[in-house]
Image (cartoon, rainbow, N blue to C red):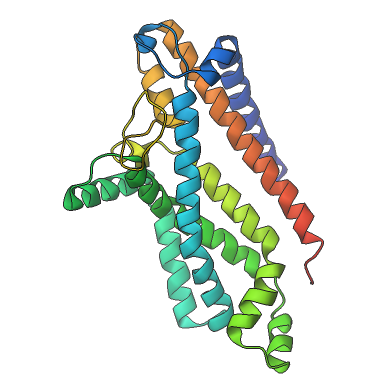
Length: 269
């Protein structure tokens, strides 16, 4: 266990040092506050504001859609089904399968749906595809958090005459706030950091996101395109974009820990 922990921390440290060492020299205020201008991808002026706002818009939308599906599923598993029932086992099994599917498959699935309905690459298409991607992650994360809630609390509510819906909303949800917030933040971080699922569904543009039906830029694709150019200056900007994305992910991870500790003290064990 100690060796595994050391290897994990060492890899994380190595990754952060590499990205920050190569990206910080190229990071400046213009990159954060301006959109790409003419010739940006051959070393001219501009920034990645379009990709930052695009990633945040897509991530927030996808997380909201995934939450609308995940939360009722988890409540159904823990309030309306027995923990060890056959149906609960089947639901968890398929969620685990969905979690293990590569993101490029979700991208291909989203592209197929777009072709079927005649929809072009857009913020809406990318949001729906990413929602499919993070839904099993969010659901299973919440599921594990809900398992920490003593079943005796539900039994006490039923003994007092509460319905299953009242128990789910007034007791179970309150006890699971820490797990819900953590699961949402983890899924959000996973969503804004994925490139394969939005490559053919969200498209890419140098403009700021202003419509659900227009293409949108994202940080992962901005990094991909910048590092794929033969110009060293643009490649450095790619590492600077990676620094921005890494900082966002780190901030989300820290926020998840903070909110977890904040709400855990109100949980009955």
